[in-house]
Image (cartoon, rainbow, N blue to C red; front, side, top):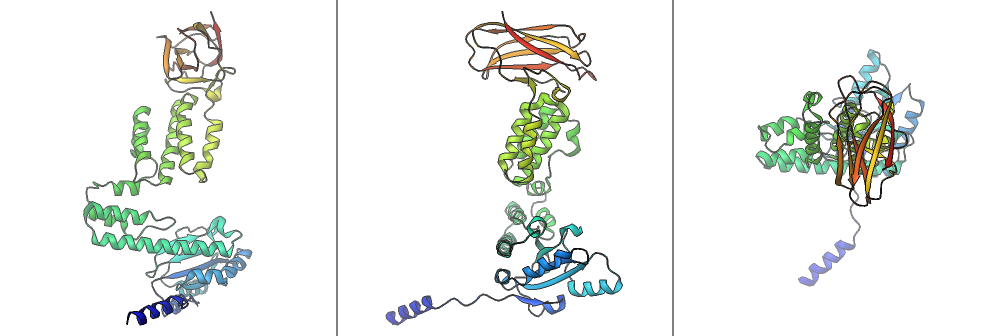
Length: 409
C-alpha cells in the first residue's frame, strides 16, 4: 500500500502542472459578466481620435501573449475613450463600461492606461504615465502580476481585519491601505473609525496625514515647537516613506520662510533625510537642488548677500576654510555694506561641538559702514574650528549684509 502511494505521488510530481486559467477577451461590461471571477477586470483604455499613438500602443499590449499570461483569469477589455462625446457616443461608451468607472485621474493626459478592477468593479490600480510612453509588454506584464499579487495581499488583510476587533482591526485596515501601488479599500476610513472610535492606535491620523500634524496652526507656531512636532511625524512608524518625505519638504519650506539662509544647517538635515528615505523618488531627487541652492549659508569669503541672508534670530555656521588654529585671541570683523541697520549680536567659537568662547551684544542696530569687532578666545589649538553667528533681527530690519574678516591678535 505504501509503495503504491509513493509511486502515485512520484507520478503526480512528474506530471506537468495544469495550465492557469486563461484570460477572456470581451467587448462590453455585459459580456464580461459571463466570464467574471475573483481576478476581476483588466481594461486597456486609449484615447480615440485625440491620441494617434494611443490606440496602437494599447492594442499591442492587449494582444501581447506575455500580458495575457499575466492577466490570468481576468476579463480583458479594449476600451476607446473619445475626448468629447455626443449622446450616441456616450451611450456606446456607457455600454462598454457598464458599472465600471473611469480612473480617478480624470485628465486625458493619463491615457493610454491599463486599469485593474476587482470583481466588484472597484478600481484598485492603474498603469499610466511614463510607463505607457513606450511600453514594454514584458515589463507591463510584470507590473500587472505584481499588482494582482498586491490585491491578493490586500484582500487577505481585509479578511484578517474582519476577524479582529478594536485597535488590532484598525491596524490591519491601515495595512490594507498601504499595499504598494494599490488604491485604498472602499469605506476604509469609516471602518477604522468603527473599530477604534477614539483612534487610540493612531491609524486614522496616519491615514489622513499629508505633510504636517498640526494643520494651519503651523503658521503661528514657533519654529522650535514646529520642528519638534515634525520630528515626531517623520519618526512615526505608521507613516509611509512618501508621507515622511512630504513632512521633510514641509519642514524645509517652513525653515526657509522663517530663517532664510540662517536655517542652512537645519535645511541640510531635512534635505538629506528626505533624500535618504527614497533617493529615486521625486522628492528624493529634489533634495539635491535644495542642498545646492539653500544650504550655502554664510560664507567666510563672500559674507552675506541678499540670497544668503538669515531671517531668524538663530545661530548660523560660517562656512568655508576659517583662519583659526593656534591658541590665542581672534577678532572677527563685520562691516555692513548695505541694507537696514541691524548687526551681529553673538559670535561663538567652537572646536567641533565644544564651545570655546562667545561674544554677545545687546544692541541690534548700527549704522551701515560702521566696523564691528567680536573677540574669540582659543585656550588651546583648535583642531576643528567652527564659528556660529547670530544676526540681530529687529522687525522689518532683515536685509543688512556685509563682509567678514578674521585675524589673530
